[in-house]
Length: 275
Image (cartoon, rainbow, N blue to C red; front, side):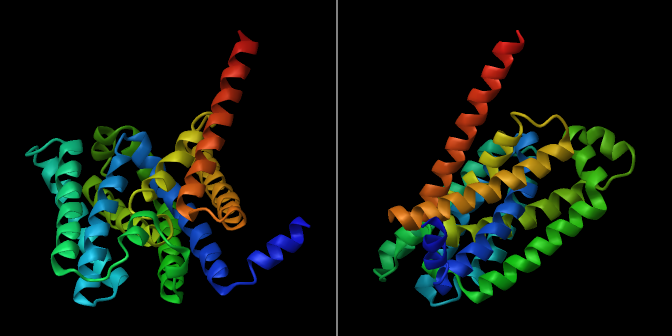
């Protein structure tokens, strides 16, 4: 019965596209999210998603391709946030709030002012029907880029994550890595908005890492565990959303929340037995 349901679900082309993009994006979000969460910079994903919403809205009004328009805009916004933070003009979380709220307001204002027939809900909460073959191609390229970054720069990323001062002292170009993560995080957020929506995409970056951190003892195991949790939560959420006819993004986040609660409870239970 279950197998028949799965065959039926993935007999639709839009579900196949959602499956490919979702699995790859879950993997990418976990890899990008691990250093961000451990460095307590996880809310940058939420901030950039608001910028992405504004860019999507403007692109729709101007009749431009949303993805191609939004990616450079969000990358520029991530550079601007980094610049504000590094120059100490505005504190990190305040810089994120300044840029994200402004972009969200501008996007909503322009859509309302022009009176165009734009489905804002699909930008806010995502829509698997909007995923295209172009999204698949960009996601595959993104996955390769992030995998290569970790493959050849794992030790540098580790040192920057836990002790940036030490990383600088041994000659690591920390600014270059910050820029690389800003670019990759921007692309993950923009692509993920099609599936998860602007209000939920940051959960794909944060939840799996938090769940993995409950039982992982090393940095490497945290990365691997968060990627596996992210992919599993996505698959369960995608199938559940189709079966229950619920919003895909919200269902995936709820599954992630359930995983976190189960692991947290198991962790507390294990600690009480040891004591």
